[in-house]
Length: 120
View (spheres, rainbow, N blue to C red):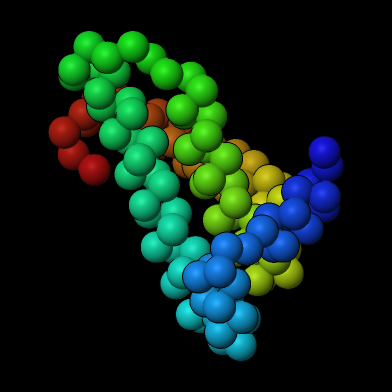
């Protein structure tokens, strides 16, 4: 499956409740992005819970459940990208640029602060 097929499928996936909500939210991009942010927050919380249980409760690492949560996160990201009219490739390019800049700044800051570890 390619990214466009995935996007089309995610946008079309509807339960009775979500169908009504999405039709209303499509009218207002800000509300749709709020819906996405709330959904992402919930799904990331579920991912954190799985990892926390693995680390602190000595539960078995459940890769399948983590993949399911990552899929749910991807669904919300796809709705956000569609709402904004941006492609995943664009986001990847922007993110790589940001990470490269951060790496350059971090290297520069580390050199400048070599002898002043507690001052910034």
